[in-house]
Image (spheres, rainbow, N blue to C red):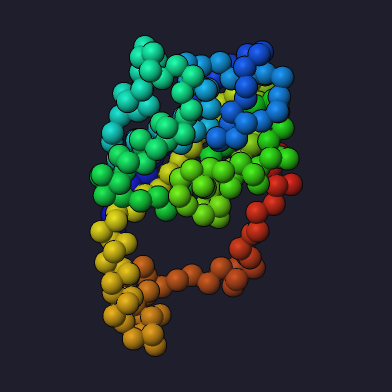
Length: 204
Ligand code: MG
């Protein structure tokens, strides 16, 4: 099965008098993020992770800050372009994971909403989006928002092949089909682990 991973990073300084956009959400806060576009640090990191996963360069390749067309642009546009790139390359998103690092605003109260918005923009399920948040302890970067993102992609061809195989298989054979394709599934319950539900209180 063809899979690719991608990694993205971004940072923007806080600035008074501009709206704060994170993950496509307008967040009430006295300061926003300075940048040529809307400064959405999280969407920029995700965009770079997607582009990197298919070796398509980075956000600056497609949207150079020197180009006046992208002044004040909504970062969802950048994300959309990256999604078109991965589709053209023959891939789709399996899941993404992200980490935001900023002193304020606190992300915990909006983490659920953020996760849903990012999932909506990417056309995936909220359960396929990880949003974590940290405060920059000891980093002396209180006036800065930082975002990291990783993505996992799978080949559209592999996905289509799996669906076709599953559709023609006898239902009783399904366990054998899954085993033959992905190997024996580990039963995590035997290790005393349960599938954790998303809990915003876990975010620190
Ligand atoms: Mg940026």
